[in-house]
Image (cartoon, chains in turn brown, cyan):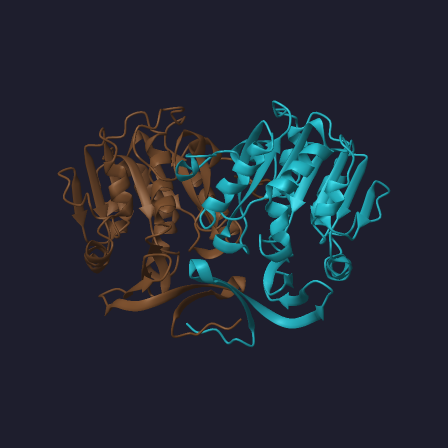
Length: 278
Length: 278
């Protein structure tokens, strides 16, 4: 069947010979920010859709899985997370999830592009509902420099909610950056980074995790979860522990739509074809 | 970006306002069988692709997850599965997986459309590598009638590897059919059915599982797994036990690409938004 291209937004993944299309009813926003193109569409079945440089960042319908899995597994793997740093994450979805944890008393979100947050406040108000929480600080500056300049033992958790490793964002996947995060973390600190698709980007995941081990993290755990509007519909995060051991079995005491104690364990199950390194 | 429609096959999921496209280099096969249209394409990144009535049935690249998850969790949940019935499954992918279990001594595959199996033998020889196993019987006839006419206590496991619940295939989702399966199973028998996408078809999954309970199955377990080329990229199977309890922790002793003991447990973790019934 052919798509009427006026009514559909299509993102092509050229290296993997596939494409995802979402049916759209209206373009709500388009701007060239200082750093990238930013578009927002109304879709017919996925709520609102945000694109950065033509790539799907999030939709109303399915972002809950990604944002919950980028935050809660790491938070519940730490015995007592108080100070959280989010690098990227300008849509504020991770920020909202982190702030559900009452014991967290400081969250600093550092995204290069203020325009993403402003558009999110306007078009994705649910994700931004906690932006005015007194525990939250939002900065719009370079995340790599921010972490390099952070004092040692500044954070219990660093969340790297970045775009794909292309252009400027590639620095967020480097050994130098992971080392800077390591230095900024407390001794029992945790770093978690989104790490693309197990089906499409296995070698990238392998490289990322090797770099994490190289800079001194004691262990790295893969987390796997569905993510409908990202390439292959299946996504991963890589969670690196600076200390020896994750805290286990802390009871989930917040409201979620995807994550729970069973999912916490289940997401760590490594498919057979990923076993050679994970 | 717009797709050059000559080079891409697109499947639209109209009710969910999205579409998946695969880049194709050549059409290898097209026929109108007695029951449906059947096409096979060479893709650029997913190996070969089979379509039935314009819907993606399988690709070389990602079918391993579906076929492993439709077979091994149920086989390893049964203490001693000897006699297996596959309804549908004409591509023979489930058949191959079942035959990896040396203790299984009889597998009967019943698919309406012989043309699917013939095309699979030609274009997906890997999936058909065990078709000549002496334990396998392939019949091409109506699966509903077959099960209705089966004697009581004929099977330890019935696998319903059906297409979507549209047209004739809708009968494979009915209470009558689940009851016929129940009657054909041994007392400790298991039935497993593919049950579509958690994200897109939650109410269908709920209905299917209610029907299974209604006809007497003691319990129904959802299994969740990624499936890149099916709608939403996330799929489910529903496993119904005629007896009281699944066997746990049988060690996986076959070669797989996705499934293993950890995945066996992990697939059963129920996301929070599915908790109201699963």
